[in-house]
Image: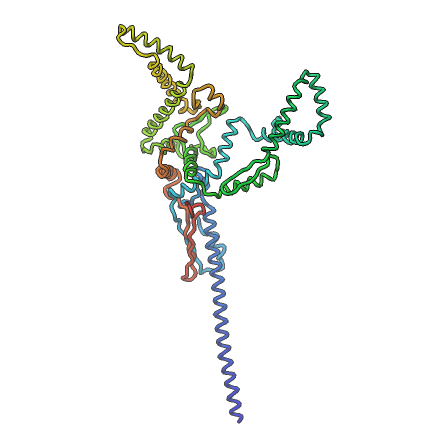
Length: 467
C-alpha cells in the first residue's frame, strides 16, 4: 500500500517537472520574442529617423536657384542611425539615392513654387509700379506720412457717429468762413452722405476661392483670419491646367538668365537676378548666359538663339508701333504731309507718268516710322532699359508706369508658343547643367538585424503625386 502511494507521489512530481519545463521554455521564447521585437522597433525607428535626416540635408542652393527640393550624390552618412543603435552591434545601415529629378518633378516644383510665391512677387511688382510702400499704407511714424491706417478709423467713426462731431463741425465752419470757403461746405457734407451710402453697401466684400467663400469686412480685424484661411484653401485647390501652364510660364520667365545682363533701376543699373534677387553670376559661370533665349528657341547654338529672339522681339515691336502710329492722328497727319510731298516729287521725276495716291504712300511712311522706332526699341530693351508698350499718349497716360515694358516682359508671350513638355525639357537641361546631371528626389534605406532586413523607400512629398 505504501509503495502504491509513493508511486503516485512520484508521478505528480514528474508531471510538475514536465509542466514547469514547458512553462520556462515558453516564457523564455516570449522573452526572446519581446527582446527581438524591441530590437526591430529600434531598427525601424533608427532607419526612419536616418532617412528624415538625409532629406533634411537637401541642397539649399538648388532651392534658392530654381525653387526645387533635391538631394545630390553626396555621402550623407548614418550618424543618427549609429547613435540610436550604439548598444546593438549586430545592426547595420546602408542607403542609396533614387528617383532622378525629371520633367514631372520640375512641373510640380514650378507650379507649387509660383503658387506660393507668385502672388507675393506680383504684388510687390505692383506696389513698385504704383510707387506705394507698405510703410505709407500703414502710416509708420518714421516715414513722416499720415498713412491710410491712421485716418481710416477716424473717418469711419465720423461717418457712423456724426452727432458726436457737431461741435467740432461748428468750429470747422467758422474757420472755413474766415478762409472764404463757407460756400464749399454743402458740397463736403453731400460728399460725406454719398460716402456713407457707399460704405454701407460695400464695406463688406464677398471673396470666393475654389469651393470655399468668405465675407470680408474692410474694418473687421477678425477678417484677416478668414482671409488667411481662404488663401490656404486656394493653395490646396486643384487649379485648372491653363493656370498651371501660366505658372510654369512665369517660373520660366523669372528663373533663367538672358543676354541682357543688367537692368536699369531707380538709381543705377542692377545686375540680372532670379526671382529671389540672386544674381545669375552667382548661380553659374558668366559665359553660360542666354538661357531664356534657349528656352524660346531651343538651339544649342547661343548665337542662333540670340538672333531669332532679337528678330522676334523686333517683329513684335514693329507690329505694336505700326498699330500705334496708325491710330495716332498726329503721326498720320505728319505722314500724310510727307506722302503728298513724295507723290509730287515722284510725279515730277517721272514727267507725270507715275501718279501715286498720297493715302497709300502715307501707310508706307508710317511703316518706315514704325520700323525705325522698332530698331530703337530693341536697342533699348537689350540694354536693360524700358520702352512704352504702345506709343500713344492717351494709353501711356492711362496706364502710367504699367505702360513701360522690359526685355523679360515680352517672353511672357513668346514662351506661351513653346509646348509645355518642350519648355520643361529645356528648363531641365539648364537646371542639370547648373546643379549637376544627377540630382534625386528619393531615398532607399535598408537596416539589417542578423540577416533580417528592414527597407524604407521615400520621396519628397511634393513629388509623390505630381498630378
